[in-house]
Amino acid sequence: MKYICLGYYEPAKHASMTADERNAMFDECFVYDDYLRANGHFVGGEALQPEETALTVYWKKGKVATTDGPYAETKEQLGGILMLEARDMNHAIQLMSQHPSLKYGTLFEIHPTFDMSGMIQESEQRRGKVAAR
Image (cartoon, rainbow, N blue to C red; front, top):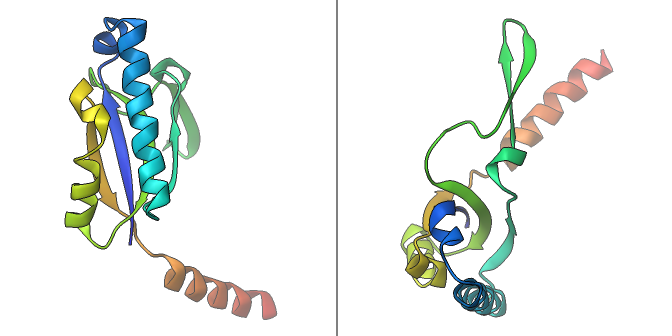
């Protein structure tokens, strides 16, 4: 089963680290990513640019609207996502509890993914019937 792990961190805490401390943290994290890859658990992942580069898109009064920045304002910033392959939630927790960035203040939200393949297939069938009319 796949899990999406959202990694949050405090930018001020990272800004207070020395370059050597930040490099040591990144090196530990990338070594752990390699461990996850080697064992078939790393499905994908990306780091995110700072919050000021984000944009929120939503529906308002019958039109698409946008707001600069992330949807939720917190002192923590979403720093990246990691897609994980794990047997179950306990296994996902076990894997993420070993992530080195936890020692540096990162926290992770772990979300199981929803398999939408059945819904997509049903939708394709409905749309196919409409198109055939």
